[in-house]
Image (cartoon, rainbow, N blue to C red; front, side, top):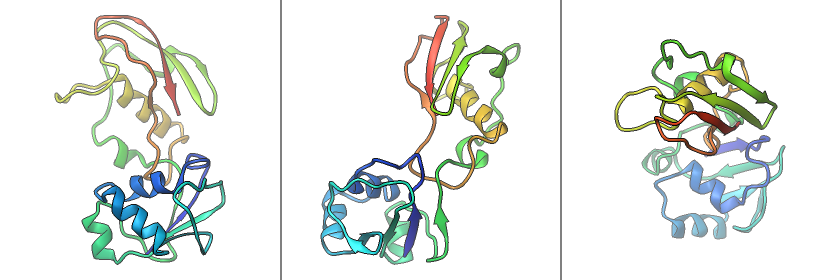
Length: 176
């Protein structure tokens, strides 16, 4: 069984979509069947796939540990509760840095939900197949180092909202 404490990042999501994020290799039919058969409960009660979760709710997945591993979900015991956010080591396995560019110095605006940052030419907005550092990697490292990204959440990953080509400079909006 896995119990998930709903945090601010999951607030407002549909139950079926949230369960799909928690067990990514599960087909939609299995997700809907699990909800229908009360294998997935919200606050200890049967729920509907289109129900919206609120901050402070508790979602429980009554799958065996083996089934959770097979479906791509992480295994937790009844006492382990996930929270919003992600740890630095699970999000970014490489140290993201670009010579001559400091992410924090190029932030134009920042609040709890949005960061506007200047992207100079020559930097990728999002990662590619190569191991080049992207603006997205720098964003995650910045949030991890500043303590705004912590916990073991699996449903939300900060990212850039708009992309600019590698050789284009400009302002990029990032959701956090």
